[in-house]
Image (cartoon, rainbow, N blue to C red; front, side, top):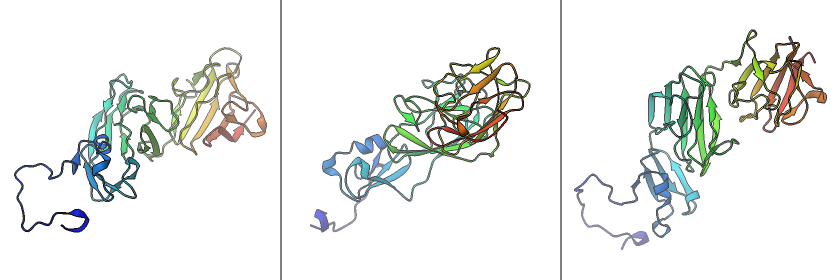
Length: 296
């Protein structure tokens, strides 16, 4: 017997099929990898996952948490993808490659769906389409601090994003650069209408929770002062350092933003979206805090 109970071979042997010699050398996906019985695992064991096109090795133990991606594998890539028209999680285009380039996203909210969030997996998504694209997790899973099954919006301006899974069921994002352009919502002539009880939200297409920089032209939805009562007043960001500029466009139908409920305003002074007023905010991981303002 050889080292560690190995069997000494006195001569070579020949394959007779295109199958691995050991049934655990290659598995369908990381779920199958994690289903390998503990009784046949050992430190240093290497397994190839067909779905992720990567090799994983048990290092420092034999638990699922000890699988570590090892070098020597090549990422798969898919280009020319079309996001599902109409959006939603159920029928979203399934992303199966490591690098996924969507070239057709015709309408805001058209959707794609990530693979199962299995520890150790990374997926890159590029949006080279015309509109903001919704990226959904698998059913019951989540992305960053978003609720389970909630979509991550990726705009053409942001361009690309990398999804990293360190814990099963949860994707974390590392935003890409894209062209670096500022995403603009509304115009001077057609500002976005903000509802008192709803506030500034991505669902109403007032803003993006993911883009690095954005400008929003805003008015209130009803005549007179629109004192925002939503909690939070502005939907939470997802990446620390995200920047937002709100530009006021009406002296009658104006919104009022107050310190608290997701906002950290300088000196706790309210801000009003009167014509010519602007408010610069930055996401600090908990609140949008004021960096600069013009006007009250």
